Amino acid sequence: MKKSGLLAVFLSSAAILALGACTGTGSSSSGAGSSAAGSNSSSGLEFSELTETNIGTSTTATTSALSVYTSSSPLKIALVTDSGTLNDHSFNESAWDGVNTFAVSNGGGTLNSSTLTVSTGTIQTKYYQPAADNYDTAGRVAAIRSAVSWGAKVVVLPGYLFESAIKVCINDSAFANTYFLALDCNKEDPDNNYAAYDYTNHVTSVIYREEQSGFLAGYAAVQDGHRKLGFCGGMAVPAVIRYGSGYCQGADAAANELGLANGAIGIQYYYAGAFQATAEATAYCNSWYSNGTADIIFGCGGAVYNSVTTASQNNGGKPWIGVDVNQHADTTLGNSQSTCITSAMKNLKSTTQIMLASWVNESGNWASDYAAKVVTVGVKSHNCCLPTPETTGDSGCWGFTTFTETAYDAVYAKLVAGTIKVNSNSDNDALAAHNFGCSAKVAVNYIK
Image 1 (cartoon, one colour):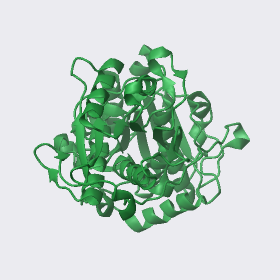
Image 2 (cartoon, helix red, strand yellow):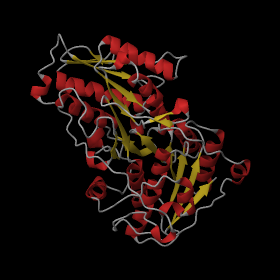
Image 3 (cartoon, helix red, strand yellow):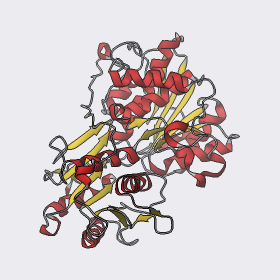
Image 4 (tube, helix red, strand yellow):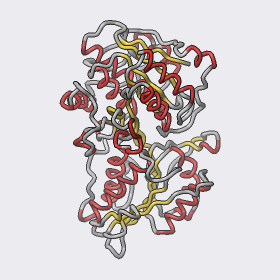
């Protein structure tokens, strides 16, 4: 999970020894059939909903808009990786796949399998990585400068680590004619105590309603027969909190639909305090699997999923849920690939294509609804979802045994229509104090 930084949730030594301390308590809530899944106003939990912009689903630029570009004078689109490489099986790779798919589909070129770029046709692509010893704002700006020197008109910036770099670029005349598409960035400067700043009309950023994806994962898990769930988050930042809260709300909605008894669903809920595997996180997950307090765990926060997969393999290959992208498609997972039964996704590939098509169709500008703004997307444009074989081409990504794609389509349609609403509240303390918005059918064991 990549999202803007707040202070990590630090674990007490007592908590890791106890492997089970909790503060969450059951309280009443409406179910999935009501207008607000997870709403808990009767016990004081505020219900809020992020305003979702429907950016549509079209990834095609019009013929007239494309006519200004030729193979000798192409539109050049670059992507700069935030850190690491393109094959990170996450933000970099998904966004880059979107850039190249857009170029091939609309510019008529061919993807070079060796360079992973499109260097033919009327839309051409290139990527840049900050120097390995320069993963900071200066290094990212230097990589963006290289992209502009190549001739990039649009530069795609995947991940919150670009927040400070964007501020530098919009105040540098060298980038006056460059347009930026940021993914998961807010208008804040981490290098300067997260001070707010404004974008120019050359910048837009897309963030996601993670709680919707989390909701779908929790709902599907309970509908598939799981009654003991785990959530192992990275850091308690808004995006991860919304993923986790949505997961709980989805489990609660399914429990209400199924008419389960109070306390029928148990959720172990924990933040590792880092976007990586930790010994503590692995110990918790291993304990949950081995003692039966979780038979499926949602690994949510960068490489923290490695703690989940390690525990899964330690316990005979227990199922787990991935995040951000279709993690089942990650062939580097080894034996853990087949045990990833679904992923709470942000559809970065789709987002990137949709936004690039809009930019071209607006004669090389961001539309007024996007320019200088942070745009929130979700189910309405199919950018928060679970992977299916039809949408991903990955036949094994649907690992449920009884929950069907037809049932998934039905609940997804309710989210799109707004007949199911998911609480966007990301106040972790308030959520923990109110059982993460769940009814008494769900007992959330929040581990501090």
